Length: 263
Image 1: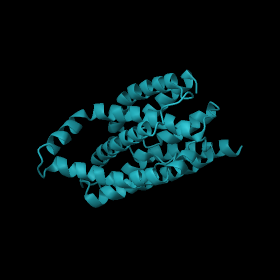
Image 2: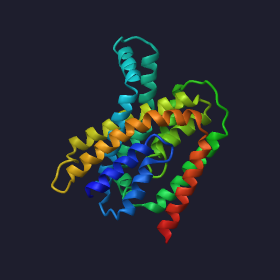
Image 3: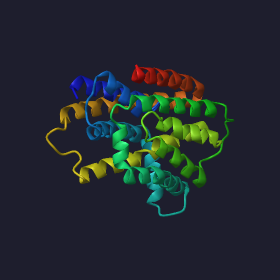
């Protein structure tokens, strides 16, 4: 993976992480355009590093929310912050289970599987289309809803299924307010990304002679900076715009990806 490719991948990750259009799917498409021949493990590592960058940008954008949550937790009392944290933890269980027991299978999906990406983008488009028709309410995220949203996040491990699209779309279909859905969606992934990075470090996944540290570092910086801008901007878009716009985009890109793969 070259330096230019890493920077472009970082920019793509930063822009698409907060849009319901699948950042991992777009990363795989860009890799295919560049003719990226990385094996599944290295390709997956690139995806994790770039997701880590946008997870950090999420923490920066939501720093006040995170500070309030931590402050509430350290009060060791039953309060809103504790309840929210428990819901975040509950939502992590499905994705953590899939990631732990099916890691090798997941790695194989991150190897220019453009046909898979195309079909998954069509599914993302369908989820967003259905969510756009749902009635908007002021409901909060319940514990039951948190687990259901967590299942959607686990399914979104597949490249092409938008994590934010699946989680926000599922939340809206459950009747949860869009702004609350976006906030929960963006925050629920942060612990998983940090956990994945910690696991890879302990397993020695970032050690070796063939890892392009310079390219990964530049991609990380590009994703982080772009993510800071995109996160702030896209939260407003998700709240105000119709999800059908993103649905149409996913249908178009998914169709192009399928045709590209077949041809």
